[in-house]
Structure formats: C-alpha cells, structure tokens
Amino acid sequence: MQKNIIIDTDPGQDDAVAILLALASPEINVLGITCVAGNVPLDKTSFNARQICELAGKTEIPIFAGCDQPIGRGLVTAEHVHGNTGLDGATLPKPKIELHATHAVDFIIETLKGAPNKSITLCSLGPLTNIGTALQKAPDIIDNIKQIVLMGGAYFEVGNITPAAEFNIFVDPEAAEIVFKSGVDLVVAPLDVTHKALTNPTWISELKAQKSLICDVVAGWTSFFERFDTEKYGTQGAPLHDPCVIAYLIDPKLFSGRHINVEIETKSELTRGMTVADWWGVTDRPANALFLNDVNAAGYFSLLTARISKL
Ligand code: RIB
Ligand code: CA
Image (cartoon, rainbow, N blue to C red; front, top):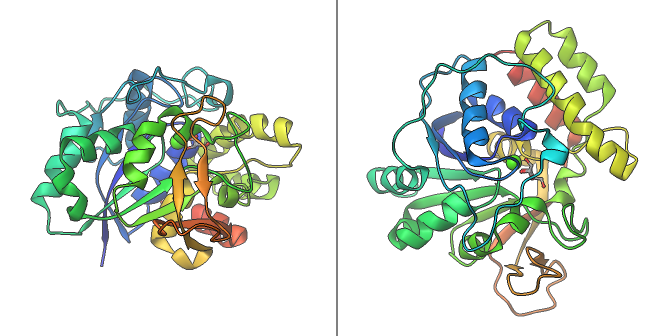
C-alpha cells in the first residue's frame, strides 16, 4: 500500500535528491511539497522546489511556500554549503510550474483534516518551522498525523552549524521543541546516521554511467555540495542527509536506531538547538523518538541510483 506523504523542505541539493527519490518510488505518494526558509531564503527554496519537480517531469505535484522566518528568531541560512541559489552545481531552466496560493501551513492543516486518520506521514527535510506552526495553529491535527520522519539533530556526532547543534534544529529550536513534545510518532535521522551515508567517487561515476540528464544533475549537485564536508571533515565524500528520510520510508531495514527521549535546547545561546538525546537511558524522561544511528550505506546508494535513474 502506498505511503501518503507531505515533504516539507528547504532545497538544498540533498533535499533535491530526497524529493527525486520520493517522486521516483512507487511506494510513495507525494501529496504536496511545502517549502520553508532554511538553507536559503523562502523565495529560493520555493523556486528550487519548482525546478526539481519540473526536472522530474512531475508537474502535477502541488508546491506551497510556507514560513519565511523561524518561530521567534531571525533566519540563519547556509549559502556557504549550498551556494547562493541553494542548488549550485547544476543549471536548470526557469520553472513553468507555479506555486499554489495556499500557505504551506494551511495546506498541511487542511490536508490532514481532510484525510482518513493516521493516513499521512510528514517528511521534514529542513527547519521545522512550517510543521511546528501547523501544530501550534491547529493542535487537533496531532492525532491525525501517522508519523513525522525528519532529518535533524545530532548526538554522538555533535553539531555541524555550532559545536552543539545540527543546522535544521538550530535554525528553529522553538519549532523543533513543539514537534518533539507533540506526542506524534517521530523517526529522527540525525547526523549520527547521515554521517554514515557518505557519497563517494564510485557512486558519482555510477550515476554518470546512467547517461540520464537527471543523474548528471544529481552528480553535479553532489560534487558541489560535498566539497564543504570533505574539506571540513577530511573525508572522501559528504553525508547525503535528507534522502535518508525517504529511504527510511521505502526500506526501513536499511536503518537502525533506538527509541529514546530527545529534548531540544531553546534557552541557552551556547547550546541553542542541541538535541539532548538520552541514548543511555540515564533519565526517566519518556521515549518520544526513534533516533537512527546506523545505515546500510551500500544499500542506500544502490536504492538512490536504481530509483533516480528510472525517472
Ligand atoms: O544539517 C543538514 C541539514 O541541513 C540538511 O537537511 C540540509 O539540507 C540542511 O537543510
Ligand atoms: Ca534540508
């Protein structure tokens, strides 16, 4: 049975690969793509989402612009990682697809209210501003949500935007706190797992060998995107973070983790956005998330190539 999902995203090259994986996979039914400010400002993330769907030839997917600022904080972006467009590394034509007039937050609320109970999974690939705002505006949708699968946070891997915090959670810790305290069934793909999903030259060559425009574009995005992490961590490849969310929905056996308590630091500026993960169960705080920490990387990259080359 197909999984009905809404993808909330801040494209970003890795978001783009995640969206392509979802659009290429028969197990997944993308009800809509909601854009949020994150890697780059909202006007660029929503433009990029239009380009990605057009590249995939999926012009029927509704795309919505959402929040342009975090809840109660100024926006922090990541052009230093993703480039000024957010999709540097490949040149795509100006998209013809238009954005829907509905605000992303209202699309999330109305879609959940109009659907059978627990029939929709929210897949968050960026800061949680849209989802946190939706839960705040319409708390009654909490029981409608089947699951939230999100890329964000870090524990043993510590932070990538500060020593303590991963970017998505750092940008909007208040929104993250709303989500992590909501009681919704959460699956979290933190840096602890995404840092084990490193791109590599063999995979890039495999992509290029597909002789497909889309695979060439993904290779270009990846080559651009990975330079930041390879320089920083001295690794041969870079973590392809966001597709872990979609891959988990397609084949959860690729991943493993632990059901634990995770809470969000929102008060201290030093550790703002830290995901305080009780991995060793040293508190009596109730478990609220499946916190992934391992992936079958070979299986993950094979899935990506197999699916995206079919688009
Ligand atoms: O920290 C990695 C996350 O931040 C990914 O979602 C990437 O796209 C950026 O949004
Ligand atoms: Ca992202």
